[in-house]
Amino acid sequence: MIPVAFDYVAPTTVEEALSALAEHGDEAKVMAGGQSLLPVLRMRLNAPEMVIDLGKIESLRGIRDDGDAIVIGAMTSHSDVRSDPLVAEHALLLARAEAELADSQIRHRGTFGGALAHADPAGDLGAPALALGAQFVIAGPGGSRTVEAADFFVDLFETAIGDDEILTEVRIPKHTGWGAHYEKFVRIKHQWAIVAVDADGRGDGGTIAEAGVGLTNMGSTPIRASAVEAAVAGSAATADGVRDAAEQATEGTNPPSDLNGDADYRRHLARVLTRRALVAAAGG
Ligand SMILES: Cc1cc2nc3c(=O)[nH]c(=O)nc-3n(C[C@H](O)[C@H](O)[C@H](O)COP(=O)(O)OP(=O)(O)OC[C@H]3O[C@@H](n4cnc5c(N)ncnc54)[C@H](O)[C@@H]3O)c2cc1C
Image (tube, rainbow, N blue to C red; front, side, top):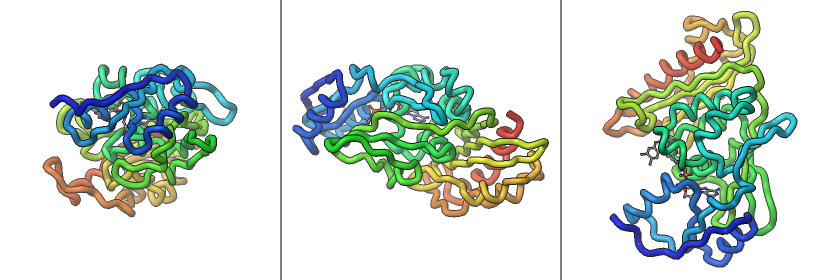
């Protein structure tokens, strides 16, 4: 289908983009890579009068070292995040998750910030952002504010970003030297996750000293598996060692039932994938 006609602007600064948003209010939509927005417009699920393309705002692109964190610009493409040396060194989990996200064409056009702002619970970046304790920097008419990952994902396709605001960058606390793994369960290659579990962990002579664990598509938002994280600390980094902790993966979840599997099947998957992800992360 062809989208309903809309006006289009491509500002070159965040300030210009914010003014366009303020001018058009509810009638405007910002566009990043367009990989989720354009299908929505083509299906006529949304019909904004104005599309504000962020693609020409160079300050929103790139990855930098900022002391105890790395900072990823919202408009950085998935493929650039996946191949970045700072990400590999300090936030390996993101590189692992990006490698499993869609296919190379979508990773080339789609953006890190766009995927997080879209907040699809089956998206591959929300749960890793939670497990890594990411902070979201959001610009609005009154300046910038920082939102913790735990407060960013509000509901299905809903985040803490207001109608008059733009996500500008995401700060990832350094997890230097941590092992990481993203275990995504799909029926067909490049599919959205039926369930996925991510884990990053710091080892200490054969045991898991500390771990971050996140669940994808186990509720209306990405979920941090805090019970697993607490239970696994000090466990042997083996399938048997993490088994009891992985059993707690379903705590606080509310998985959907659909053609790919019912809620019970997803709960089973979450436990199995958590065990696999923890062992693989501990192995590097
Ligand atoms: C065939 C297909 C398969 C896919 N498979 C997967 C998959 O397996 N896993 C996965 O995670 N994703 C998948 N995706 C989605 C992909 O990750 C997109 O890149 C992502 O969801 C949206 O990123 P985008 O940059 O294209 O954002 P856009 O589509 O441009 O925007 C998405 C939404 O976020 C808003 N937005 C974007 N940027 C900002 C910002 N800076 N501030 C405020 N709001 C903003 C937009 O207004 C819009 O509502 C798939 C997409 C397609 C088309």
